[in-house]
Amino acid sequence: MSDQQLVIRDLRVAPIADPTRDILKGIDLTVGQGEVHAIMGPNGSGKTTLAYALMGHPAYVITGGEVRWKGRNILELSADKRARLGLFLAFQYPTAIPGLSVASFVRSALNARRAGLDRTTEIDPTDPIRGGISMGDFRRKMREKMALLKMDEAFAARYVNDGFSGGEKKRLEMLQMAVLEPEMAILDETDSGLDIDALRIVAEGVNAMLNPNMGVLLITHYQRLLNYITPDFVHVLAMGRIVKTGGRELALQLEESGYGPVLRAAGLDIAVPDDALRVPVEPAEAAR
Ligand code: ADP
Ligand code: MG
Image 1 (tube, rainbow, N blue to C red):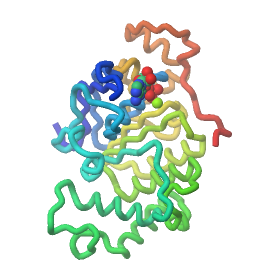
Image 2 (image 1 turned 120 degrees about the horizontal axis):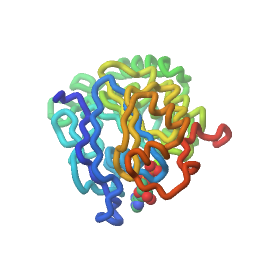
Image 3 (image 1 turned 120 degrees about the vertical axis):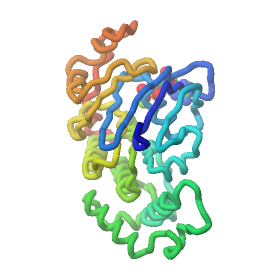
Image 4 (image 1 turned 30 degrees about the vertical axis):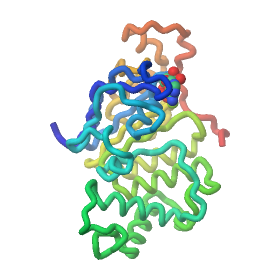
């Protein structure tokens, strides 16, 4: 088994408030290099819980299973160690940091990533001659990535998320991803606060960065996102389990018929009418 795969095995997750009630009831999923996997599912199926568990969110406890990446169970590592191992975890609710520029923020993140998992005394990420990135190299990299993402250079001087629109927050997320050059990107595009522009920004960002060395796990509520980012695999998550896996045609089938037929075929006892299991195509145009 290659080390460059994200391997989720029998992952079980409960809320910290009620650790005996598993939300995720045994997730098995392998994301290889160069593959794009999408996870879709009805409301309340556990999509956000999966994203948060992978990110190490303190509101959740791992009650079973493991997530292996580069020979380690990442669930035992702090979020910053996960990042230093080449995982990119997009945070859904980024906080504003007035006084800290986007450029300084991204540079610290890059230097932390370059320091590697086990910091040694020979590497001082703040010092260009001891492993840190020089200002010149950093500026070049920022310029290159901002051009790739078609971003205005003035963005680098703004304060982190300070007064940012939903779309601008997404741009910063994509810029971080571009500069950090992760080998595995995990993105959660939830329903709240995401307008259609933001969706496009994410799609364009991910597409600009796709390469054979990067895997992507894209958790999404919207079929439309998958018109912009073509997934290699689509998984349906329902009641804490993956009940079906297919190719991109599965997303189109879900858009057409909703989750009802797939859930019934999986033998799930669904108490709501099929109408309640339609797939939202895209967020409201005016939701900003
Ligand atoms: P989705 O993102 O697919 O809509 P979630 O992962 O947000 O689903 O939620 C799955 C289920 O777990 C829901 O029933 C939700 O109420 C419950 N849940 C999620 N997070 C928590 C939490 N922090 N505490 C208690 N219950 C939670
Ligand atoms: Mg959710």
